[in-house]
Amino acid sequence: MGNKKPRPGKTLSHGPPENQPWFWVTKAMLGSITYRALGINARRVLDAALYEHMSHGGAENGNLGLTYDQLAAWGVNRADVRKALAEVFATGFLRRTREGAFTLGGRIQARYALTWLPTGVWPGGGPATHDWIEVLDRLGKAGIGSVAQAKLWLRAEVETFSRSKPAGQKQKLAPHLKIVRTSNEGRVR
Image (cartoon, rainbow, N blue to C red; front, side):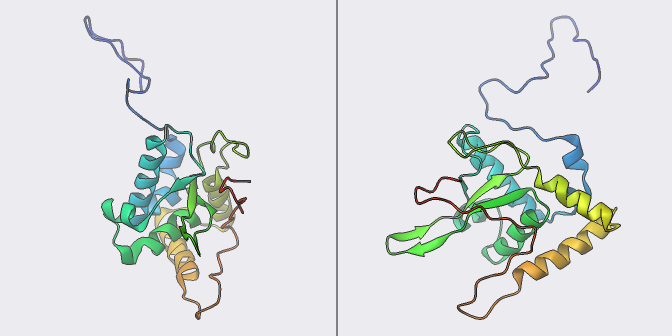
């Protein structure tokens, strides 16, 4: 934004809109090769996570729930959810903070955090982890410097993540996908 002066009778506001939930994103993040390499379904997953974040007044990052039904409402086909999640995990824009599970009482929903925003206000919340920057640094060291190269890298990462395992074996995540274990209360430790 430039230093525009408002015309007489007009005012310029460079702050957030009044009475509307909002979020911030940096130019560096939007311009990163990893953000631009994301597929449409991965972008829809991020949009859904941002909407969920704003729906909780920005106080629940790290405790954001995203169900298949919610993602379908955002236009992600159920068959594409795992791949879309793998893309946002691999690029470091979204982190799973709690794995989902089946229990006698029902299903425990997985929880997520947007990594460029601080996590919730509860004990255990903290500053933004900026995982996406770590991923960019690693790609730079590997000589990956264009969107086309990042797309090829991302495709390989998603294939590694998405390979199905025989029944009874746990899905092995790529080494950079960190999952934070939670206490019984479901809060991030």
